[in-house]
Length: 325
Image (cartoon, rainbow, N blue to C red; front, side):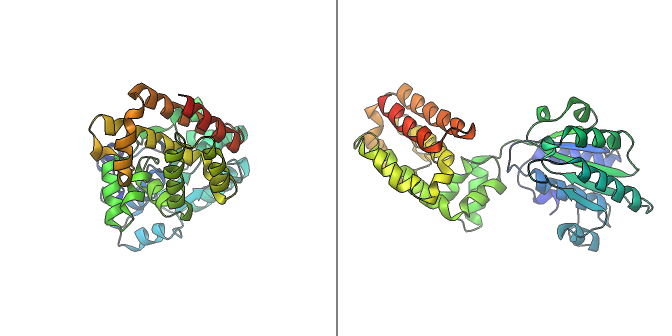
């Protein structure tokens, strides 16, 4: 994949291509941004460009070198992923040995460390020395959710390339153009930060079912309480959807936001557009402030699950709190 083919991230492309054109490619980059925003794809695109036989400011995508990077078998392109929960010192040492050995050649070497924020202290210290005295010419690409997630000593030796969440409308159009179901595409792009993550959501077997469950619970929670608690137990916690309770809660925030959109006449922005008539009929049962509070309640419950609160407890408390307003 060439940089031009990575969706969005125009500033990142500009910074990287400007460095390539000026001959001032840094020896280490930090690609920082939310999951699914294209960091991995951009790292591969940069590697293709730096190793491309045509030596332009973007990869040709056709030469033997570009094809080898794409298929993961280029001898000068290396990727490290966390071993279990962390990137370990043995992985960094192996990378250093391999790059030092291969540096007998004249070409540039490129390596990518995914989950750089998970590096153990020993691994980070070992990498730090490598960044300070790299075997030239070597380019490192570290991938992390934020600059703050890395040690300051590592951060100070890299050039930050920020990645931002994609534009939902552009991502939705791209997914629909790929043949993805429009309703699922619209939902996914409001839950994920980038096209890659949105596509992955849409392609999951459970995603469409999760959306249907949110619609069912959303309609029942104000009219059939406490029956909605039984529905949640049967439809969520006795099925595989229990693994995605945090996603269900994030969808609920979108459901409540659609209530506000209906009240303010912004129907074109609604995520659950197939439920527009029902939403328009029931949106005025509460004030805008109450719907905002319901959104916050849903997102708070999702955060509690990520903080290891038992999902069923978090979901049931959400349903009770959201009903009470």
